[in-house]
Image (cartoon, rainbow, N blue to C red; front, top):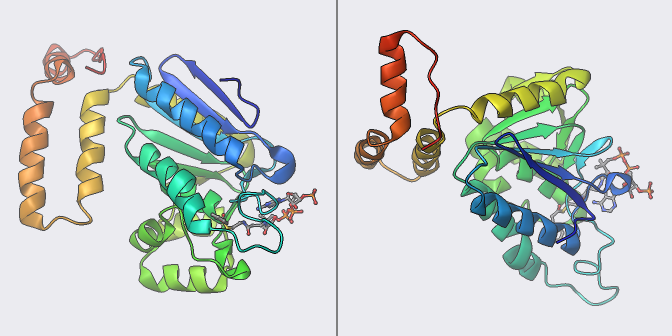
Length: 263
Ligand code: LHQ
């Protein structure tokens, strides 16, 4: 597939996805959804990918749904927005969450509506100091989607999530970092360098072990502590059989840097 609305490359173990409709602040169209779905399929099929980096081109990260797109704005006729979630947004969020390697999001500018919640579906979020997050849905009579009603209360607590979703106020990157909504706020000109360095580092780490950590973290919100203890036992059983565990221990005992293969 040729990509027109995203850029996609795989190099040195890192897959980089760049939302690329800068004139419209990288808002989502049907085409962008299908290009992202195709790229995520390729990531899943490529054993060499050990970290993913998601970012946006231009001054915005993503302004959510393109409100001019015919799929959601069909003139006088009421569109079926649930259909749009079912066919496009929900599969996107599910497939991102299910990726078996760390997904870093570098929020380079405004992240609004589904754009903000897309970022929260990633594992580690860095944002440029000039970036911001807006739960814009309430301003046009919609419900936060793309998993935001699940992720945001878990990230910042229900008091903050409720006010953000009902008021639609803009949150600066610094505020977002202070509230634990994201991992870190960095200077604008350092964002990509720092995000790329993090992705490059993660691509040299025990990928299988990291994927098991992701599974434990994903399960924690619905499990009891007993269930989580059982899950940790099961995941550790798998982790203990990996070559990277053998290598990690051997390297420690040999007092040298480990050479992980991701297996
Ligand atoms: C846009 C957009 C945009 C089109 C900026 N669409 N053009 C799921 C399923 C189904 C249906 C509906 O929705 C969803 C999920 C959702 O995401 S709903 C939420 C949709 N997003 C929004 O409501 C955000 C709308 N955008 C804004 O509020 C502002 O643009 C923000 C605050 C993001 C940025 O403001 P500014 O920095 O002042 O930029 P701007 O407004 O001047 O935008 C720059 C250009 O981008 C402009 O185009 P133009 O041709 O006039 O230069 C905007 O029209 C365009 N743009 N967002 N979502």
